[in-house]
Image (tube, rainbow, N blue to C red; front, side, top):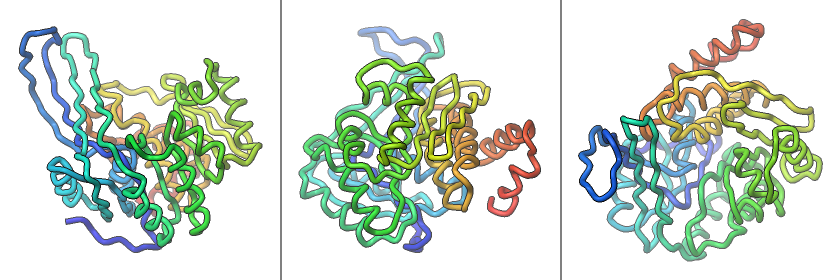
Length: 329
């Protein structure tokens, strides 16, 4: 059963376009012919849900606000109720989408198929905004795509409601919804990938140029911090204090699914424990690396995160930098 959470302690995550994620393995992908899939795995998905799962994996408290409808929605809710999360379900007429990922043994490549999902009316989203108004969550995390039919300024409105209720708004989005939120401001932490930042500005960026774009967002008061993921190049943190670039943690890559959500979830969890943004950023890098070590739609594992973080700390005063973990985890 879903666990009730204290309204003052739990981080609130928002998922307006959730998924049921299926993943399978096949020997080789070929057209027309039937391909016998193995190792089917089923997980709940969607950015905010994944962030909450990471927070719970780390021992934190997270509330999930989710739109759900149709027969697939009933399955989604049943799966969510089995997790150690606070749960707020808001009904919609449309059915929750099913996404699937196929890993090809021969090439080692993975293929992801993600449908658009249901059409959602503006009225079906309003209860989520009312929840934010009532929430005492220290952090509200909005992550993932907006459903069809929902106004592109929805995340911008969420930022406004979060600030009004005394919380900090964390955004992981792309496309028109991101552009509208950037125009509005009020974001505490913005966590784009390099490709998302490129789409925002409309052209390609090298790391130096991306850092300049992030610094401009901070200088204009759009967001206090930008945590920019750079793939194999690591990640870049930009804030009022300056910039911090960290290299990627080298691990064996099994699947890239969930790495970005793990990065965000670990950062927010660390911040909720009173860590400074730079240490939270380093912890997020460890979680992102831990996520790519797992198969299919599985996210990061707590033991892997702690091991990778401790190894990263070893090169830079591990005793001082990692002391907080012994007390909190």
